[in-house]
Length: 172
Ligand code: DAT
Image (cartoon, rainbow, N blue to C red; front, top):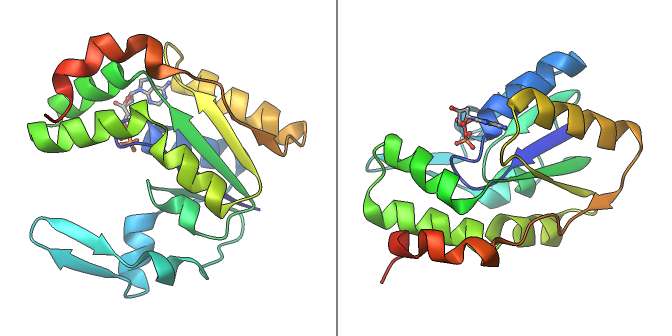
C-alpha cells in the first residue's frame, strides 16, 4: 500500500510519516527527495519548485510519502493532518519563516486548502486533528482508521472558532 501524509507546513507530517512508516514496516519517502530523484524539481532561489504533474504517475509500494504535495501522487490513502492554526503559526515562527510565508500558511490551514486539494485528487481521504495529541496518538488513530477500512473521514475540524486568535498573522 502507498500512503500519502499531507497538510500545511508545520502540521507534523514528517514526524508522523516517519513514525507511521516504522510502525507499519514501510519505507519512508519525502516528496522533495522523490522529485529530485526523478528530475521533477528545480531550484528557484532558496526554494524548490516541484513539477506536480510529474508526481502523478509515481507509485511506490509499501511506502509512506511525506509532503504538502504528496496528495498529488497516486496513493491508496491520503492522510490529511490538521492542527490549530495558532499552533502552525508558533511552529513556523520558531522555524524563522517570514511574516508573508507565515500568513500564507496560517490562512491555508484556516480555510482547509490542503484538504480541498486532497479531496479533488483522491477517493480515500482521512483527516486527523493533531491538536493536543502526541505524534504516537496521531499514528495510533491513523492505524485504527486503516484497520477499520475507513474510506473517507473528513470534517473533523472547524477553525472558524479560533479565527480571532490568528487574525494578527494573516496577510493584510
Ligand atoms: P511538517 O513536516 O508538517 O512541516 P514536522 O513534523 O517537521 O512538520 O514538525 C512538527 C513539529 O511538531 C515537530 O517538532 C513535532 C511537533 N509535534 C507536536 N505534536 C505533534 C503531533 N501530534 N503530531 C506531529 N508533530 C507534533
